[in-house]
Image 1 (cartoon, helix red, strand yellow):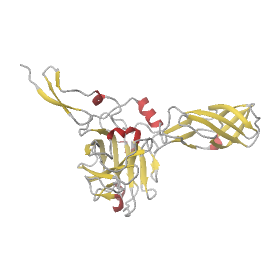
Image 2 (tube, one colour):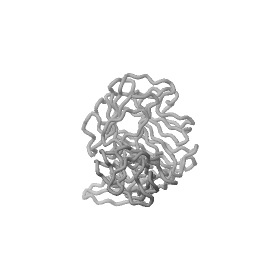
Image 3 (cartoon, rainbow, N blue to C red):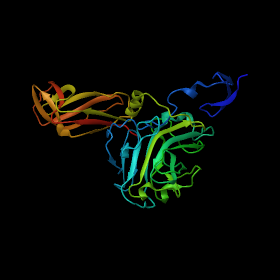
Image 4 (cartoon, rainbow, N blue to C red):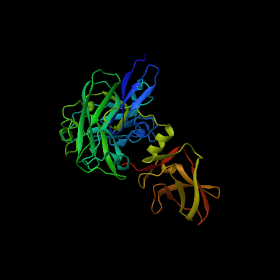
Length: 381
């Protein structure tokens, strides 16, 4: 007779389905298996395995309030207290991962009461509306991740709303230094407060690196405060040279942590590009667009974005003088670059200025004339 083993399948809504598995691996299910329990995009965190790094391409960033790898923001109310870099320290990632976000403390710093140091990710309301937070039907979620630190003890983080007046501090323990540790935390849904269901920030997930008393509260309960961590937890910025590495961050509906959702690279990149896209121009002589001249000193170029962004993006660029307009075989240095009229979420016209030399309605080619540079389109929360 086959030996039966009882197992349980968990739906995303937390309900259990009873099933049996015989010695040959055949499963018999009692109840209903929800298709949503195995679908993609159960992880509400984007780039939780830190693969995508459009802004920095693996370079180190000194945290004074800046994005690091895509979607992850390094908050710092005092400048230059820690650095952030994908795969900092070159340790071996956990099995199944190739990247992690690495934080290194730059000094021994004691945070003031109103100071906070954390890495965080904001989650768009369109991606969390089903959680029904702020109502009596609020669903619990499970946060899971892999963490590695030169320090040991009780660390903390927080989940909060976009209005920064609801927060749930949580704690977790790292018992062994310089060892990857798997963490699972159940967070009950908030039945009060305002939680966005549109394209603004609904949920913020924070990993505290050393915050003052104003930003730390009691772990394990919802509060009407803007906390980023829990009282008494470890301060990474408090020890010079301390390291804190993290990857495999997942936030999902239910009370059981499922294996990390490994989305295809192209899917993950497109999810990141909804919030930020960098159009890289790799070398001199690179053509990045064509258009027409408005007059002697300006022209336009249409830029189509690879995906619809969350909102009309903010424009940034690298070294402006590296850009040029090619008209009738002559190069004219770009002196200004702005949006022309209203920019939509999927593209629009850029107004390009030069000193002179163009002719109205003349066809122009936009090129790089000196070296590598870029255009950045930012629609972060």
